[in-house]
Length: 259
Image (cartoon, rainbow, N blue to C red; front, side, top):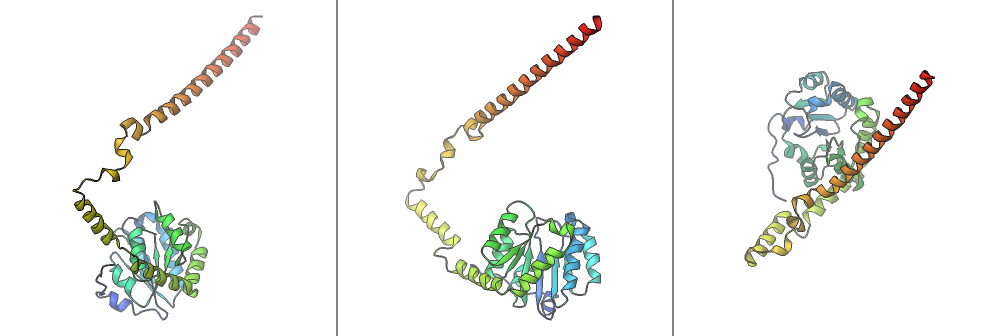
């Protein structure tokens, strides 16, 4: 793993000294706007942080999330900013754990510095990533919708992360696994580039069979064609039957009236 700059600029160097028992970092990355989560969602998060007054919370919010910035001004153990020097915060020895949305980049950064995770997947692969972190024992996951209904479950997850040392131990193990892998991603890339060069840049054996598929095969147009044809046939048949039954009933009513 490459070295990164972990020096903290002001005021973050001083912020990391706050909290009697340490610092907890919250960020949903750049893809999830805290403004779109809603005032109730973010206020539930901040009110939960208020209850853990032995810890100091550093929170990243998006630039247009003025409500969160204003709300946090009345909470002494919370600092909200639209920009956080994440590598420096994650590398700091006083950081207890990282509350994340489960994005791949954030998880990989946390694994570099042996930081336990409380992962709240928001969309896409994030929910899966959160469950993987929990399965591997270096964090816990929380359903995003739970924070719409209250703070109880969120509080329980934070208390679990604070009180159970296994998450830090497993985070350290995860870092070791990544550092001692037989080959890094960069090494594998260089090895395959050399492999390609030694074979005159011609390796058709490695090409996917998908390259030989026609447009119809690739997009399953033939399969969907059969499906749509079947659906339309069933709908047409039902329409014909209903029309026939309605016509029969109307005809019977007319005959009764004439009689």
